[in-house]
Amino acid sequence: MPQVALITVHGMGETPRDYAAGVFGEMRARLGPQLRERAAFFSVYYQHILQKNEQIVWKRVDTQSKVHYDQLRKFLLFGFADAAGLENRKEMHGSVYELAQGEIARALLGACTLNPDMPVVFLAHSLGCQVLSSYIYDAQKARAGEPVAAGIWRDIDAWARRRWGAH
Image (cartoon, rainbow, N blue to C red; front, top):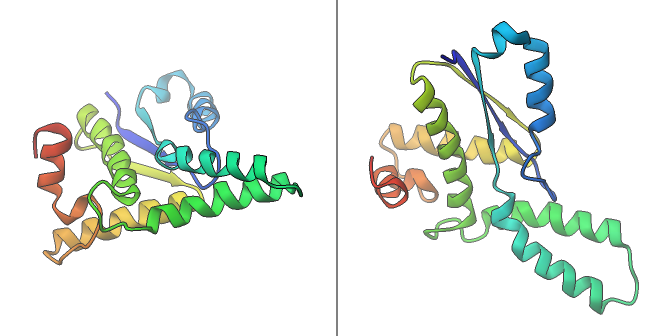
């Protein structure tokens, strides 16, 4: 049974779904056969929530522009659009902010299902730090009985019932 969970959260930009495979592979190799069984590995992936709209904009820019600074344009679009997309209308139900928090909750639930008493270690990069920080901040406010304006912690029980049919 795992005794610790490592959960990764990616940063901004075009991120493949298997972004954590290298880190997890290296961790497993360094832990060795006896210790690796004590660790559970999960990744939070929220890029799929943002990328469809970014790809639509990229195709428009790429086909309609006469001057191409492709790498710079793509970096600006796929990088800064992630941060802007997470904050835009985050108070709305089903917002990108709420959906990204849902991905964190999914990873945490996976870890708790394996062993509810094990510690969890997060490894977050760049924008992933901000996404995770907002999740933890909102959770702390909700636990203290303070109002939360956006995300799953605005009403965690209602969100969990909609998502999983349970508290």
